[in-house]
Every structure is written in C-alpha cells, then in structure tokens.
Length: 534
View 1 (cartoon, helix red, strand yellow):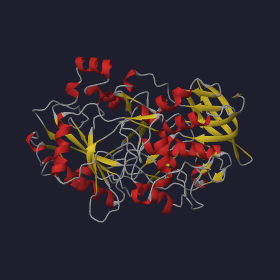
View 2 (tube, one colour):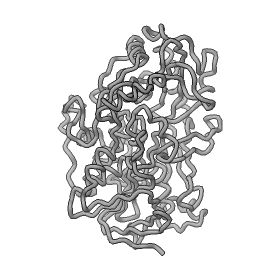
View 3 (cartoon, helix red, strand yellow):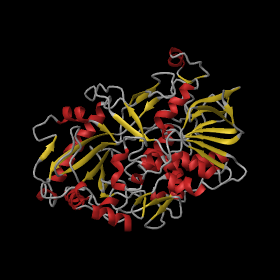
View 4 (tube, one colour):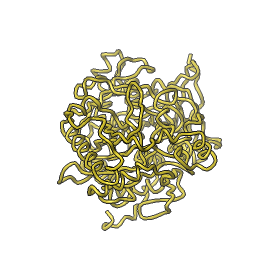
C-alpha cells in the first residue's frame, strides 16, 4: 500500500541540472514547500570533483545505462548514450565545457517554432543570472551567480600546438565562444571552481539544502504522475522498495532529461494513444508528439600518432594528483578537450554547424587504448536528423526504445565529412605538423563517409523529445506547460524545440532559470542588449 506524504507546493522529478535550478529558485520563497525526487545516489564520489576523471564516470552507478536501438545509418550499431544519474545529473559527470549555443538557435526557437519569449535577447539575462564568470561581468557575462565558469588552468602541449595550427589554417582566434561571435578557435571555458568540477548541485542545490521548506530524496524512482480531473495532483514513486505518493497543491515539474521525461509522461498515459494502448496503458491525454523530435549531436573521433609527446593520461601521476589536491592546478584539472573550434561546413550558413575538440591522447578503442596520440572530436551541431523515444515496456524501471535516428538526414553526414577534412587541414599546419607522425584513424586511404558511419558516436546531448512550440500539437506551450494537463510542466532539455549548437548543460540551466520565473509568475529578466550587439 502506498504511503501518502503531506502536500507540497512543487514536486520536482529529477535533480539534474534543471532540477537543481528549480529546487533552489522555488525554495527561495519560504512559504513554498518543495520536494525533489532523484533516481540516482548522492554525488559523493570523489572522482566527480576531479575533472580529468570525467570519462570514468560515464558508466557505472552515477550514469544512466542507456543504449540506442540499432542505427541503420550508422552500421546498424546500438550506440551508448550516457546521462547523469546523481545529484547534479549530467553536470556531475560531463566534460564541463561551458558553451551556450548560438544566438541563431534561440531566435529560431522564437521565430520558427513559435516560442515567444525564448529568443537570444530573452535568454541572455538568464545565462548571465546563472553565471559566476571568472573574467568578470560584461554585456554577455554575469558574476555572483551559482554556476562558476573558469578558464582552463592547464593547457597541454598538444592543445597549444593544435590551437596555433587551427589559426594558421585560417580559423579566426576566438577567446570567448559565448560572446558576440561563436566562430573560431580558442580554449574552452569550464564549469569549475579552483580547478575542481562545479556542478549544478554544487552551485544551486547545496547552498539551498539547509532550507526547512526544501526536501531532497535520492534513490527514488518516480513511476507515474497522479492525474485527477485533468490535473497533475502529484507523483507515485518507489524508494528503498517501498511505494509512496507525493501530492502537490501547485505543480509537478519534470526535469528527468530527454530520455526519462518522455518515458514518464507515456507511463502516465500522456503520449501517442496507439502506442500506449499497445502496451496496455490507459490513455489520459492523446499527445502524439511526446517522445518525438529527439535530437542529439553525432560525432566521430579522428586521431594521429604523436610518439614524442606524452599524452594527458601519462601525466596522471602521483605527483600531479598531489598537486591537484593541494592547489587545483596541473593536468588533473584538465577537461580533456581544452581547446576547440566552431566552424561552418560550407558557405552560406547563418551559424556554425561544426564543433571540434582537441584531446591530447589517442582515441579509445574497445580493446583498450595504448600509445600516444592526438584526437580531434568532430561534432555535427547544426543537425537535421530527428528521432524518438518510445516505451519498450510498461515497467518504469525498463530502458525505453531510444532512436536518435543518427545520420538519417544525409546532410549530417556531409557536415561530419567536412569536419574530418578540416581536422586534417589543421593537423597539416605548423606547429602541429612537426609533432604528428601519421594518421591512425580513419587513415589516408579510407572511405571517410563509410568510416564515419562505422565509428559514429554521440556527444551525449539529447534534447527536444517533449518540445515546446506555438503549434497546438506541440507537447508544451511557450510557458513549458504540458498541453492537456493542468499543473504539469517540462523544464529540462526535452522541452527545447531544437538542440542548440554546442554543449547543452549551460542552455539547460538557462531554460530552468526562466522556467523558475514562469512558475513563480515573475516578469522576465530584461536583456539590456543593444541592437548593434545582436
């Protein structure tokens, strides 16, 4: 029998980046009782703090164990799609790269997708409000916000050489991808404080944890939304093997991410009616686009031999570990992709569609990575392909059918092929050319397009599976409210109409900051951005 708790004003499902923002902002009102339910464990693993340890977190107890269905345009392979499953969500296990996307992304949300109030000028104040920028405040950046953003404390020899070569190859130097212009090559800023990871849990949740009106429960799997007379009245969840209910007199806010949020909606009877009936789920709201429109950034890893330059992994010594523990300095503070670039695959584009990341080490292999090398991550960020999330089973603990439909739009393959060409052009320039001793993968004689299909991976940026839009068929309206149900909003990356051009943690946090204002009925932050600066 379910144990029913007292009522809350807000029940937040998921303590990832978005959930942490909402928990902190909504609990600022002492009269509002807020409950946060997180499926994963607390974020206590020491590896979370160490930036260089990030890849070790992508599998295991702190990550979702998701894989896609076989991808017909990517060698019929199932592709691993990791996501955070702990306090802080993806911000606790990701590569920490702080990228907001391109202003064209948000203007398209407004102009193409009909989401009034979601243009670049509308969202910039929320990026600034969230930010504690090491470089100080400016037209584009904020200080004093919960999310610390810093320049890299360590710059590997290969990263420095790659950046110089990229500029020699014709890419403009860019020391701030999040300001007036995204195009160019430079060093990535990261969500770190003093050389240690700074997650949404660090910035938002922990400072709010002592509030009497905020309750955070970990290890709690939400199994369904309680629907009563067309309204979300709370949620059902399981914690330590016991079934519970949490009721709300206000709203249920879904922040479980682009895979779990549509899964939970469908398990609750909100989704494509025919699909739900086939699994024996009673239809509460026929919302055909729940789970549709899934987008992600596909990538491939091109790498070269650099036998005379130690890799980043070789620098992970006891001495460097001690240095990091003492001061936050040295190679253990590295995000891996210290330097990178945004570029356009062809003339005539209104924004970059390529993102590159230079990683000072060889590309990983299933049989294990050995030797020295330089890897260039080539990512398609202006993607056209869209897929879906569907239920595999009515069991809430099951992994859904995840189909990003990678490369189903041939244009995405064109972009990646252009990115491989650009990566090769950069490596051919000095000073990098003097350090590289041959291409490992794909190799000069390879069919590049076939190789991309066979080696395709993901940048782990799924979005848009419960998109907002001006069209009445869209899952959510422009205030993130789920159509057909009162008291229910989606406030995570699944609500994005399209994936932004770049890493998705910063955009998710900005979206959640605006969601907090919408929930509280507050007027939007004012941009103060002049037409010339746009």
